[in-house]
Image 1 (cartoon, rainbow, N blue to C red):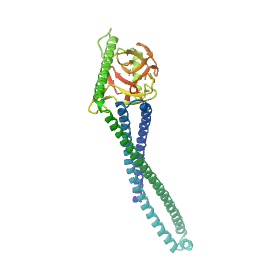
Image 2 (image 1 turned 30 degrees about the vertical axis):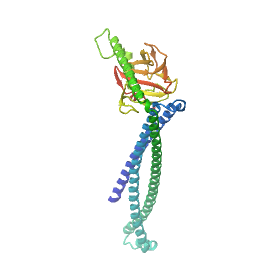
Image 3 (image 1 turned 90 degrees about the vertical axis):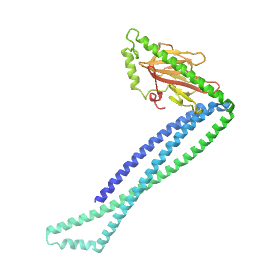
Image 4 (image 1 turned 135 degrees about the horizontal axis):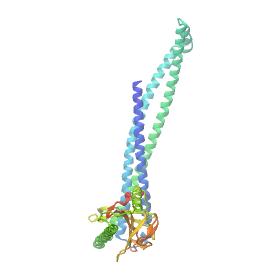
Length: 401
């Protein structure tokens, strides 16, 4: 009995481990599906005009982005395969224990049937009862025969149940082995595609060797331009804070009305659930300091994220607020700042602006149109979130697309 209880506990724990691993594997699959969706958008948004323009370093940037996402898929698939290996080992161990238990029950049942046969069950049962010395003993013997018959039936039920459970485990094992085979094949296919794309990058880089110096120089110029806009944004926010506190003591915070304080609180409560500033897009540059995707020796800093989107895409405010400023620099595209209490969202690289300073906006209201670079064919929006003058990672604020 103790041995059977130990086996039951072992099977229960095995099922819990397999269930937990399956949940993790399903979560990894969801992550892969999100990246695959992103890859589709990368192809749609960045490679649609590939044949219409001359080869350029932007092609390397685009292909590098695809490679990064596919490498993420390969890593996630490898994690799924490792989990499957654990599940398969667990299934094999469970199957072996069930088969061992089944064999023990079958052996015991055979011995019981053999003993019954030798005892000539029908006649001997009657003689066993009739040969009792008194009524009480005869009753006890009848009860014993009933219990023995019930025990035999229960043993048969156990054999059937164990056989069915072994069949289920074998079927489950077969499915996991098939899934592992499928994942391995997909990984091999993705590895081949990666090799092709890496060779493609090398080929483009070879064709563009003469332009390499100009490309690096352009990266530096873009970084300086971005820093110039960020400094101007910081200056404007500081000025706005100072203006809001003009009649009070100096403060690093905006002097807010009760309505503006409620707006700020609502903005904070919606962290991670705010909509994207464009209907369709993919992040091509992340927040923070990072190596350039092509020139790895060059470091770039971003106070926000860069989203590639459709040509002439409408840019929308992610939350209701007031237009703090509309920045316009010579040689660069306009930027709109929207205030949400002590939070500010910035929408850079617009071709058209539909709003004015001081205008009240509703969440999802169009504030402009995204700018398209004619030479690269890219339509990109630079999107930032600030708390006063401190830049925050926008990916923590907007919903996963």
